[in-house]
Length: 111
Image 1 (cartoon, rainbow, N blue to C red):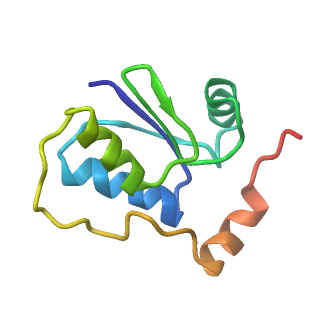
Image 2 (image 1 turned 90 degrees about the vertical axis):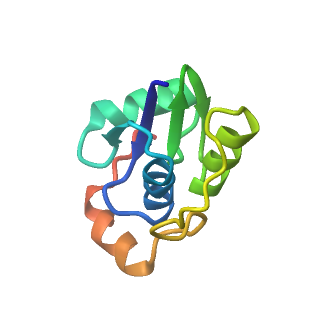
């Protein structure tokens, strides 16, 4: 599987996606959309929208998705087998106010 995850460095939703990748031992490209304008532009172009996280799995773009939704997609499409291994962090939780405050000066907006 080729997995590209367009993620923020620190974000509840992004960390939820990361924990699912670790839970199933999946190799993935962690693409920083906050500190690299080109990465953000690529995510918007590929997903057709500006919200993150977005995860591309073998060419299928899952836009504005939580870790829980990524896990459901992987299981429903039999790309992984069920695992009893616990998630390291919540898989369906947004950023805290503190995380938003840290990212505010770095957030990239094209429109």
